[in-house]
Amino acid sequence: MRAMIQTAVLLAGLLGASAAPADDGIVRRGGEAFPIASSVRVPPGAETLWLSGVLPDVVDAEAPVGSAERFGDTETQTRSVIAKIRAELEAVGWSLGDVVKMNVYLVADPANGGRMDFAGMMVAYRESFGSATQPKLPARTTVEVGALPVPGALVEIEAVAARVPKAVPAPSADE
Image 1 (tube, rainbow, N blue to C red):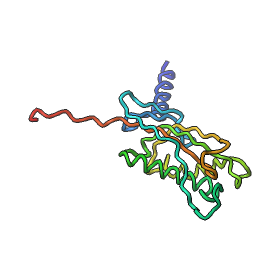
Image 2 (image 1 turned 30 degrees about the horizontal axis):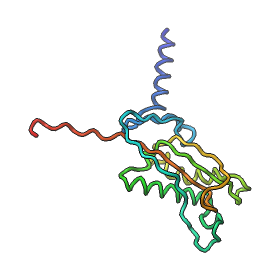
Image 3 (image 1 turned 180 degrees about the horizontal axis):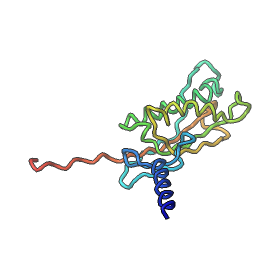
Image 4 (image 1 turned 90 degrees about the horizontal axis):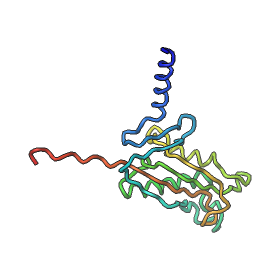
């Protein structure tokens, strides 16, 4: 019996460590072996912000229209897209740490043997998610698609952000 209780306490501790709520009340599970959350629980009353798909900026205006060189490789494009997502979030007073879900669409990169460059995307992704400065991980899906709306674009990301409004302090008796 004692061994079962010790096992239960150990298991509860392990589960609690991987599913601890952030200071904002949002619970992110997983992320120990790979920098994405296996699930994210957003509590009732949280604000939600849905970001439309974001495409990269042009990095070489001299490159032919419709070429991947015009937007850069997958890593460069991912960095550009995440910077644009960060700017959109900051414009409304939010941050990348508020992102709870991402859908990443990658086009096969001709420079990567005609396959999506998942590794290149991950280099730029890891700079902004699961780092020491921004440790919160979103749930995420990454898929290869045939094309994106802008020829030469290899990356599009849509995101959902959520945050629990800060409690408003109750008025004091003097007010």
